[in-house]
Image (cartoon, rainbow, N blue to C red):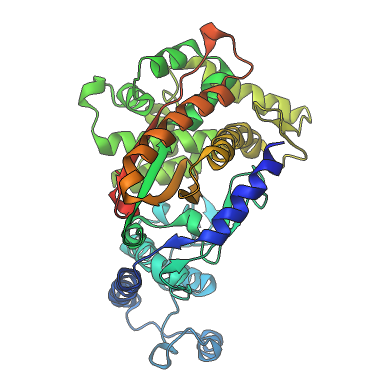
Length: 413
């Protein structure tokens, strides 16, 4: 059983930890704090002379995370206070014809006021300081609490600190100790490959066999241009919309995301016609599968299975019904790779992290190239065997991986 075999891998990662450069770590946290403070000034300027209600002043006074100088100013980390700002001070009472009820990340892009963009940027910059300032480093290492069963889909989770969600700027703080190197290897488009097996779309399988960038192909269709002319920004945008579709994002969320990425204010209908409607035209069986999942859910089919037969009961909604077989299926592939890698590695090679589609190793410097070639071959071979274990030879979907020897986690492009 995969979960039973993963117990040793999880325990191993907890025990060995991940190497960090304490100075770089502290620098990243401080840069986040300073950057956030600078953006607080911009946010305060949008409020102007607005007087904070007494209940908020009292709350700020009792909040140990709010400095004395800011007690009478808006606490931009408070959902209640930010909602008050937009509704009472800035006059944003409705979004899409409905009362404004939150200032969450899916709502702010729909608000046509510079304070909304400023708040999104503040939260982005604050993220490292907010989540990692209290992280305890022990002898140049950080020890996360890894778990393979917390997430409903079975994806690996990690807390204290959340090593599954390391922002890009902080990755440069993760290093190998002297005499060692990191080997970082990631699966290419693994969730797309899982979907190709599930929905049996011939066009998708052919593109993956031909090493075609699927997201670039879909972007070319959306923007009406040759694949070779699609920009990286357009590809990233369509990739986000694709995953949003698989994970059940509604039209309102689609519109908010498109507007945030393009800087435009498209209507729902414009987004449907220009972006959402033609998204899966190159791969019709993907859309057919998604539609069938929705119909099955409405018929009270609230159970989901991965390609390995792992079952999730009481699936709560259509987004989860779409999400589970894709995300959990990709997770099965990664866990199969991790258990095989753990049992066949050299004793001097440590598995220090499983982050979505990435596996991180810490190895002696002189063995780094050997480890890089070995882990790539393992990911491709075991990944392919796991993904295609019930698939006929002619219908197999290939698995690909990219591996690199690095001095820091950020070195892996």
